[in-house]
Amino acid sequence: MFGKLKEKLKNWAKKVSEEKEQEVEAPEEKAISETKEKAKEEIQEPVEPPLKEITPPMQFEPGTHKFEPDLDRIEERAKELEKIPDVEESEPVEPGKKGFLKKITSKISKAKITEKEFEIYSEELEMLLLENNVALEVAEKIIEKLKEKIVGQELLKKEIESEIKDALKEIIKEILIKPFDLIEKIKEKNKLKGPYVILFCGINGTGKTTTIAKIADHLKKNNLSCVLAAADTFRAASIEQIKKHGDKIGIKVISHEYGSDPAAVGFDAIKYAKKNFIKCVLIDTAGRMHTSKNLLKEIEKISKVCNPDTKLFVGESITGNDVIEQARSFDWTLKIDGVVLTKADIDEKGGTALSVGYVIKKPILFLGTGQEYDQIIVFDKNKFIKDLGL
Image (cartoon, rainbow, N blue to C red; front, top):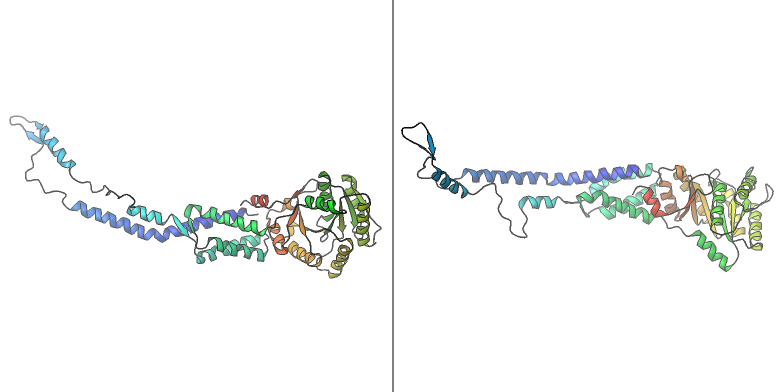
């Protein structure tokens, strides 16, 4: 999702650092200029009284055309030159006291991001989040939290990018609700009484029936027996579809005739599970639009009759903000307990997973990553954040 975001943060950090350097550039240049002028003045002043008598280092020997060097005078003059102070040599700095240029560089090694600066860059960040299917209210929450964490904080210039990145990572971690362990919940219920009942809901075409088969296969591999209830009695070929899945994974399917009461199918599946000591019942339901109040009332009836332990909403991660509104409607009707997002393997943005859980305050339990039965993963928010590139 955040390939562009990572690049944006890098550019943001670089720009802030450059602006902070420009703020102290003028006084630094002035200080260096003053130091040079002072050095020039010291050079122009005589460093020692002029010699009263200058003996040439070369002596002309009468009667010859040669100059013979006066070695004694050359050595004496060299010793005199050694005594002249070097104006370019810096004065010794007292222990614990910084030199002039050192003071300047130390001032620009750290920077504070002002509220005004943050407002400029936060607009770009918000637009980037919205482009990546992050809901507006979630994007605003992220911006608000990020502002609290970095505005006014003194940060090392070289660490501005990593500090912003770490702050963003922590915010996303706080937003995502930690998923509960479905397998442990099933085992706890089995110790007390009866089978664990899971009701699945969602709109048409989200891959709900295939997802139910995947989860049933996942539970079976964890030594939890299951039965499937074909409570979608309206869609053509829906019963045949779930029976085909049941045959492939070796799980019993309870079904009635098309047009029969879906609540009765779920009730019979629970009755069968109790009689045969099966640990979990998974109830498929007909897909229905979240805007249809009558159909939502019908699934509410199924929930009241079957009294499920967990109600899971199945939605497509690639539909962006639409799936958030769907989840909100189903939650309002059923009080769902968790979310399963399908087609996560082709969702490059990832903002849907970040938004849907926050909006309805429910955890994401599974991500569908393909058509095969083993292509479903238990949601791990730490891995999810890592996959975002943060």
